[in-house]
View 1: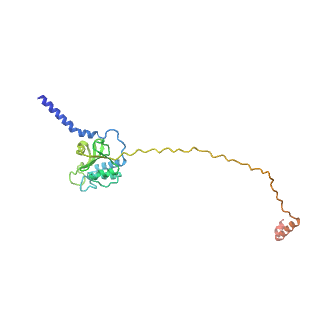
View 2: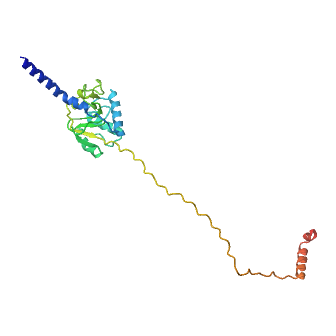
View 3: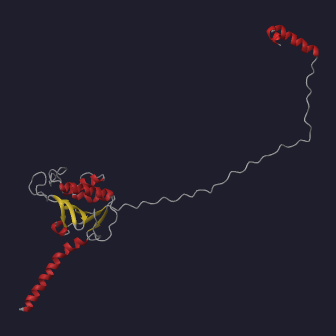
Length: 242
């Protein structure tokens, strides 16, 4: 009897451990040093968090471009508000479009989850991973009305409360690569300053030949006196002053 009880207890303990494995694995994802997040992804998450806190926005498959969203239009709108040029996507076309925009694509389990990762099942659902085992998404419509009367249609969920995360039914992890660190400009080597050459004064060369002497034109006293008399006759006032 005691052996049977011990076997039953061991079986139940093993079952509990197995059931807890997916939740534990999901909760451990993203631990360790987290690289810098692309500012566009951070802006997308901030927009999504504001929408989740505003219950005028709910889940709808028929009115999915605002103010209500379904899972794929919610992620698409958040990415567009973050600065990505992609338009509204469906889950089946999201992987290819984001890959064209430079997102890295991993299969589930290939890498640990990081804040900003997009968890995608192309045939079912898509969500943002926020880190610390939390996800952000448009989940489902609870009442068929516009807006979110329950606060659960678009919200943040812990991994154990989200079947998509708990059961790890996503197929791909889409990740925007971290921005490259800014490179410091290489120093420019300036040439050493050079002094301008001192001016050289050259003395004139002395010529051995004598400078030529030109004689002044000869004048006669008679011609000078005649010229003065002619000027005085033409200008008598000047002559009187003299």
